[in-house]
Image (cartoon, rainbow, N blue to C red):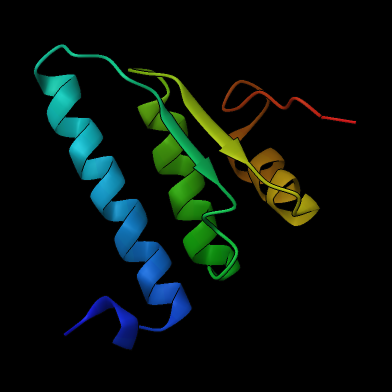
Length: 93
């Protein structure tokens, strides 16, 4: 099935899964590189977003993870699910 046939949410999830899988291969070979994504959780419901935030928090123990977003509810989810040591927030003004 061509990617154009996927819903926006499914395409976003597939893109993120491919990025993380590629990164995992590099990390296993000791070639460190960060994961940098921009608003990749827009189409995710809260439960899926929480699971991705948890995965990113765990991944951040092995490499740098940067998630850009303008969705304040993701900060609320991160705060409630990851605790203060599970993420670092930098606000851009």
